[in-house]
Image 1 (spheres, rainbow, N blue to C red):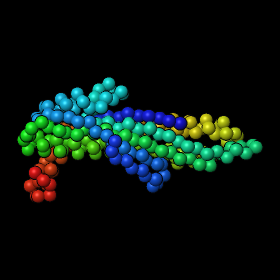
Image 2 (cartoon, rainbow, N blue to C red):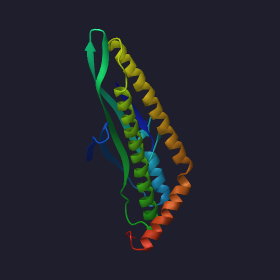
Image 3 (tube, helix red, strand yellow):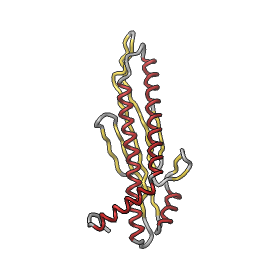
Image 4 (cartoon, rainbow, N blue to C red):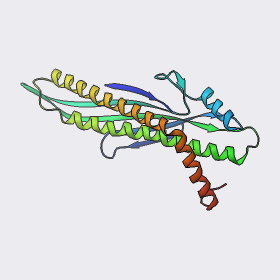
Length: 204
């Protein structure tokens, strides 16, 4: 059972097995230039990862794949699932800014704020995927005794399709809310970053 999802918006590797559902997380980066806000936005639109579901390029993206390993106990008159391990593989694609020449502090402030928000956004996609991976694993383990393993396997496929459909809807809803609040969020984050710089908690 394998399902892949590409959502909007090799170097680091981590595996987590706590709370069930294995998580494999990798990052890669694409380079952009630009010495002004307009140029940075144009570079992101030109060089960002292409997302099949929208047909557009985005500032960042997360690719996800769910894989289930299920163990069955086959008896003469019944079959049940005795083990289920779900692995969620995620690959996060983020921008890396390499301006040619000097840039003003306002541009650097904008970039640092935007880059942090893009990473937060994509990492949240990963957390949503991990949560549904745990739900899927728990649901598979909760499948009761069936007449035979063919029926049990069909039930597992049904449960998987349902959970992954819910996962897809949750990811779409997250993107929708983030898009609505994007402008106000970036302005708020820039103001906060300025306060931190003025307080000496962040470099200027």
